[in-house]
Image 1: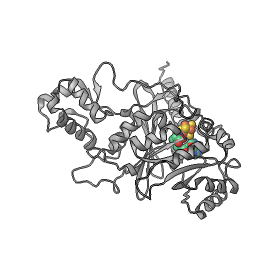
Image 2: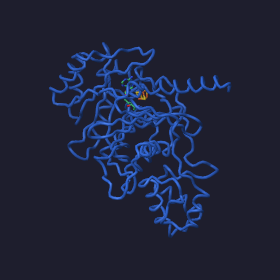
Image 3: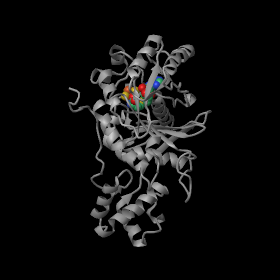
Image 4: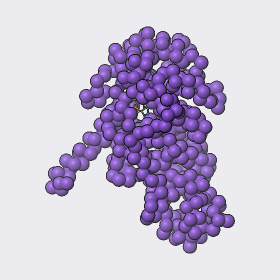
Length: 392
Ligand code: SAH
Ligand code: SF4
């Protein structure tokens, strides 16, 4: 049962468009090599050309072939004829009083997803979306009430990182620092969608983000959050190698079935087994257990003690997320005292148990709020169109 194929109703658009210019963004190195050769680059030169074009796109943020000055004019013109360098288009941008930025970006087909940048003292984290909506229906998550439209392509996923670097004006100049002092130093796959239901595209995009000749983020600075797609967890370790977070949220199967319905497919025991096997590069690399604090549902002392027991044998930290309410949500946020008491039990058992500070609440950028903002933006554009007499 556990390794039965995952079937779900997701539309994945082909990675290579059948006609028109090919977008070079999002291709892996071997794919880039193949398309260059298919369009006339001599095989002998292909490796070198891949390296050059790759660096222009991912290291320097260049979108215009004509700016690729180490390529001949003739070759640049040929590239411009056959290829494009395209990332999602920014529809709107909001900046919170706390500095959090949220962009609504438009992808092929007119769909929209949200991207959030959270500046902190020692890092800047970009929260990236992997799907339009989500096929899963976690009962506390607003994204889960949105019907899935489709998986994002690798170009649209890594394109969110490139878009943010544009907006932060952070394409490096030679000799610029690599990690710590960057504005965009970390990526979390915690936006809209279940990344492990879009595995290949997420993997390819993150490989590009980690590439030493490109965006150069360390695998330790990329965290993928899953609701618990057990068969893909081992693949995440083998094929991406990033940090893992898991939306745990409950300590009994009864409660978890209600909160995170994928638990009916892979229950707590199966999930923990997969997490125990998740390899670590170093001791400091722990699995993050995300735990949303829902008043009267999963927040008792007994839950905290059960959680500690379940964590046994897993290098873990627990990230407590105060529930972010949305219109019509069937839950309430636990009180601050309750959250602190819960955190203390976990902390006293020897696990870090930070309470996630909601960021960007004023612009609806906090965890689980991402759908509402999209819909609002849609509606207001419709209203604008109506006011302008453009009815459709
Ligand atoms: N689909 C993936 C990643 C996106 S959600 C996953 O479920 O892990 C990122 C985190 O926000 C998850 O832990 C999710 O459970 C949590 N979340 C969703 N809705 C929330 C809400 N309304 N309040 C607080 N956290 C929420
Ligand atoms: Fe999907 Fe994650 Fe929301 Fe669950 S919490 S509905 S898996 S986005």
